[in-house]
Length: 280
Image (cartoon, rainbow, N blue to C red; front, side, top):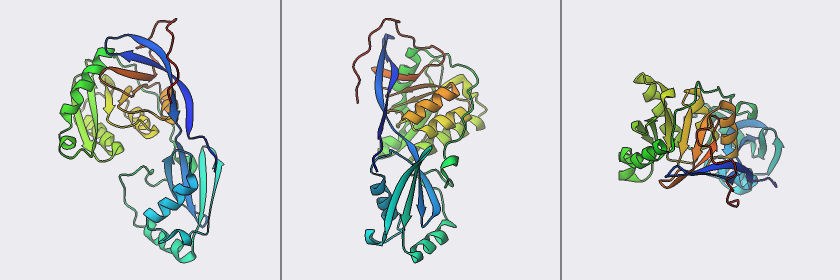
């Protein structure tokens, strides 16, 4: 199935460590909900780049033990049904029956599926608007980025986990949590903020991962007004950040960051500043 795997370009603001800002643009990876159905029965919705979807359906079926060989898959049909893709996989009746039995005992995983969601229209929740703008300055972002590695003891030992941290408006990291799943790490951080009675709107969150739409949803739900991600966001993440009025900074490095959404005008470049050419 031919689909665009790259969306964009998106307008961004490149902010350097010294505070200089300039207009720029960058392409974003597309991210859409993909509903996998087996013999017409919805099984799971996964967030994926809409490319090589038939390969994805077959690989998922094999990797999850739904079938034992690709030969058991009688057909794969993918079609666009906004807001994503619906993929029908035809398998032998006894495999479908076994899958239904197994679904009764499903547990959460650390992958990229949306736990418990089987229909496309339920994959993307409405986002709430964050309460008020963060009082952020470029130096606070870079201070937090400099400190972040010091709050990742498990990753220093294993090199296999993500971290989510919360920093005050001066860039001092107050809390950090680690987990093999980026979603899980952010959930832990949000829980820690709530249990300690901290005001989530008083600072910003950092994550050591790409920024998918779920991370924006989680921050908006917890009233965290700004999110900083080490890697790039998807187009859907940027769209939801705009809807929520959430400041979104990504591709964050110690020498520069890219601001993908700046609803409060915190990082305004000169009006006549030229932007560099597009990068893929």
